[in-house]
Image (cartoon, rainbow over all chains, first blue to last red; front, side, top):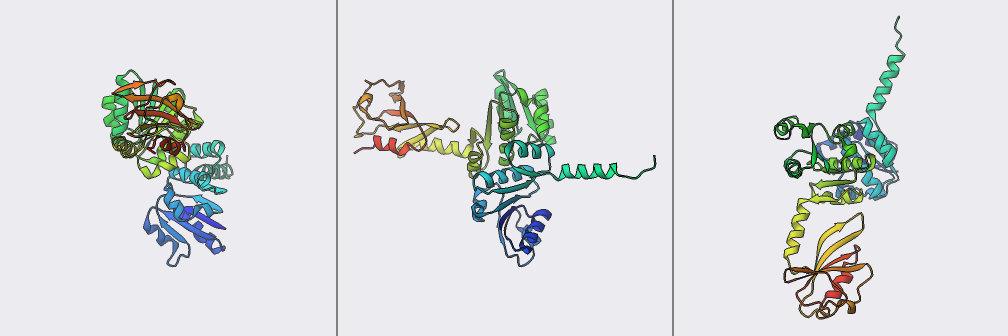
Length: 138
Length: 219
């Protein structure tokens, strides 16, 4: 599988390395050149210095050939725009994106057909479950 | 009219000022605290603090009853998201987006966001308008309607000079809407004769430009 990942922070870089280890082909885009350091010294995939909403950067990594596309920068709007471009402009079938804001995550999932993952909503659920299951003496 | 303006920079506040002076209702949204505080001195209740890409801030601004949303922040991705939320979630009748980086224009177009306003593109069309070397000048793109309005000149020796409108076989999808002659605009009739030097306004489907220029070219 060929996977394009936008955003090479903790999440993007770990995801890239994990997929590589499983034998997949990976390309990473990040606006910060130093982000390449997170990928280790001899990263075998492509790394492009650019922003995810820049169609030229997406062309450079041949997004049209990607089987999957992940947007995981720290900007919700950047992720949402990059994901939509991957889908609409490059025809990528599997597009997933991280969106911190639960409202935007839900709206774009339900009404715009973008597969969003919302760590904030997930954390709220996990915390709520943890609190509910606390064993406290009444 | 009620206009929600996202972004209180130079563009946003000038727009707000003009709209308010014409008796429109405005709500401007600014996410920088210090800039917001400065804006309140002039705009008082017509400016609010917040990130306009947050849906609840748009709701607080009253987007549900807005006639127009103008997304004029300095971030293109923010402007895209604001317009998409306005269009698809709140069904605002019209949303307008500012394009900061002309290289992002295609992203706006692909995602169906617009009409868009870009300083670079406006300058370019102004320059094109002043350059007689260009056969055809784009005046207006109606993207949703899939039509554009262009201006084309009847040059000396053009096969169309001295022809009546009814004698010209226009390509399908092209209509001549006005003739600019001696600083006057004429509405063409079948019997109207074209003269060298006329500027013709035409409405056409995108992609018909070549057929139109070809028609006007000297043989």
